[in-house]
Image 1 (tube, rainbow, N blue to C red):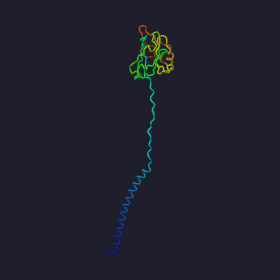
Image 2: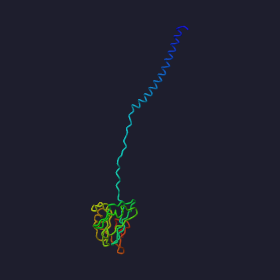
Image 3: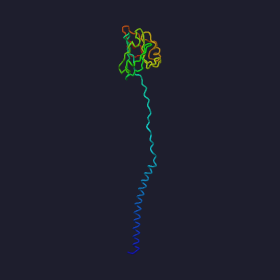
Image 4: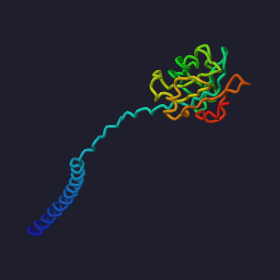
Length: 202
């Protein structure tokens, strides 16, 4: 074979080898660029901000005193005042006072702390200093400070006497100057309606 032809064939072979290596290199370059772009985008992204959970303290709801009403007063040495829970939740009565004139009694111990829904407790005349048919009163206070007019929430007065009628009238739970007149045929008065209306007691 002439030397010139051999030289030409070898040149073609070298060129083909160079082109093939160039393609593989290009593929490697493309792959390298692609992965480089991905890692670059991860590196450039801002880290997510971690927000700490909130732990705000929610204050407990104010507890409203359940509906307590005096519903019956029996006169005499063996008498009593009946206090009923007419609300829809059990009544925590710790610290609730019932007063008859100058005598006040915490009904919590009498009721063992609670008056369940639809039930009542009896506070006897002996612990209230007597319950005379001639005259007296019974007042319910939400706390031990019975001199504070804001604590009175129940009141009934019968006959003559009583020292809290003005306070009860002042907060709108009893008419000014009103008093229940007990029926002589009975030794008691009972509530049949609005506890703030003397006409509801008979």
